[in-house]
Length: 170
Picture 1: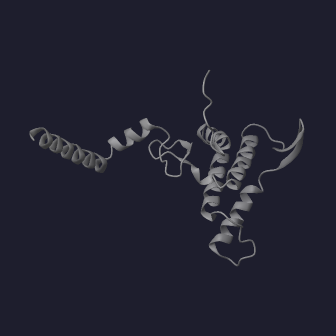
Picture 2 (picture 1 turned 45 degrees about the vertical axis):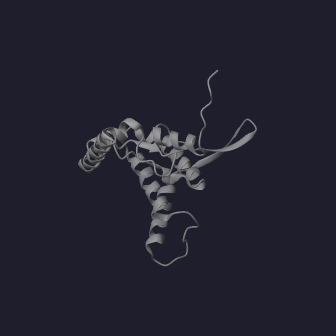
Picture 3 (picture 1 turned 60 degrees about the vertical axis):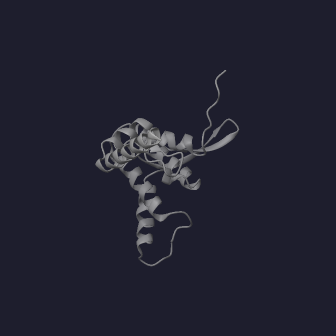
């Protein structure tokens, strides 16, 4: 019997969003990426709807224009009523579905964890807030090619060698 792996809150939604963002390039993907960046810049909390012309109100205005591109319908599925993208096919449907995922992740305050890997620029969901790489291999490869990391690592090795040599002589 295999042990079921734990799934973090929002991991399913973030995984679907990352899969779509990693599947190619299109103007729809750029719009979703822009919406994510705007949401992250606004941060949590209510939107400044009636503020005068401030940076935050301009962000809200641009975000509203991105959201207005999408339309949704309520559908009955089994015993539930769900919101699904209306009309369109192909990339238009996927873009609307991805915008829905972005909204869900923002409601859970997990949108900031959907980011690009620092090593290879693929989209990933950071399970912990400090994660910067999508895999251990990517982290090792990136660190080993960084001259500052190499210098720190060489210094640690020299110190360890010196300590072991001193300890063996006693």
